[in-house]
Length: 364
Image (cartoon, rainbow, N blue to C red; front, side, top):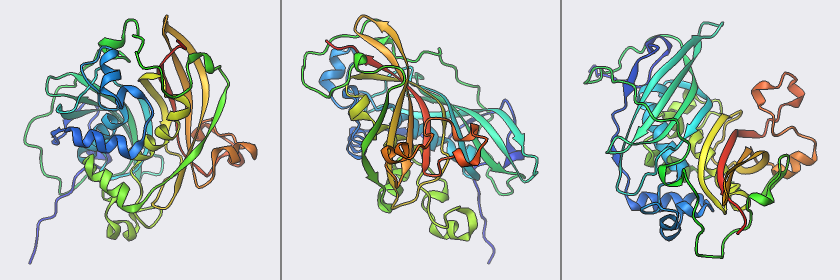
């Protein structure tokens, strides 16, 4: 008996520069999902953990964490952009211009900015910009990314039910309206250490606590965010030659969020907002059983108002070896792996790297 077989995502020739794909997922994010995310990632930034703290900043409630929003945006886009991708290559200009709250309904669209075949002819790089919006059309997350996809056209992809969409625009802000003026002083005096005055350009922090990833955990979270790439949950697909590891690979957005969270107690206990991420990549993959570690280097401190400043870190994640041990061995952790010409300088244990700019409180 013959059967129909549908495929999703796109191959290189399926991408049209300038086209916008309106992704089909439409998800109302309830308080349970927000709570589950906070419990899984243990991020120390109080804005996203405490409704009381968030309201004192001028927000109406505890907002969703930025990496939660990023994971929804990345995962929604997989259906149309990267379900056939070989690898995720880069994160660019990741911003969160509006706050988003439990009960909001999220949708996303992606616009193709570029498509370039490799000299080998069997693959190429696709560059897209994804915009995540809530039910009111407010842009709550926007980012660009690059993916490596195979050459060709997909034979059995169902046609979308609607004509191409119009690209969504945002106002290029890195902060929500409530935080663009002066940052309010919270009433609670307890909390984590680490204010603007504690960080100077060039400082390096090797975060001591690691995180071992389990199979059930990373698969459940990939499904929670609606990531439909079989590389993350289909063992038959992976053993058929599609996976570099011969098994399921941990979805990169989760690695991003875990590495950011591992750094949070040392760097983000007095952060008000994640303003921007840029120049990010996954130099190596992660599978279940790997243990993640993190390190941060201060790149810049820029004034914002009398109570806060922007602090930019180079955030990196490693697997199975603590960052402090790699640094002691002379490893160059904070230079982009793709920019290294000398193979001996590459750090095979590095699984994540990005520039992270946060709005941080000054010492009271």
